[in-house]
Picture 1: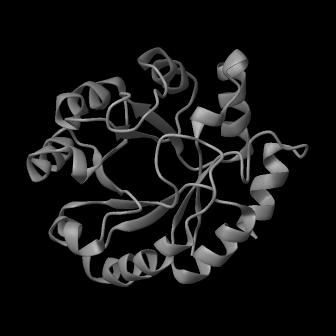
Picture 2: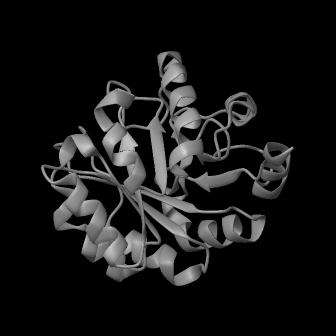
Length: 215
């Protein structure tokens, strides 16, 4: 099974964002992952629209947008128009989540849901036929550098099993180390959001790291 390796651009070198994006692109990443936060749904602020536009301007690779914000429905069209390929929303943050997922599809984009550690599969099961990606948060969202929450593993296994019926891809985000990539890909996870645990701030080049992770 092909692994999707997706750098979390919140962890990139912001003093050289253009150059860092080009290096990641050339190293062979699959999807650029971009976090947007409003300080309300999660207690932090993420990237800005200008960062998104810069990354979009220097790569042809797919870009995903992870909207960790209240009322994501207000922003999905904006990000679709800016060139996002995949848009993740949190069902916990949207009053009309099925309508928002429909809007994403109407804009010709892939729709994803991101699920907080405390949200059960049962709470989102009705949405599974409507999405292309399900991203399980394996830390509490909002900050890089946290510890992996092992209690999310049974939820990942359930979602992998259900993906055979509904045909979405299972992604994981939060403290994803090389060991976690190996363990979780064996369980059937397709995509890995990579931050400081596996990709950024290392002595090896991006090419070397990605080659190791693909093994």
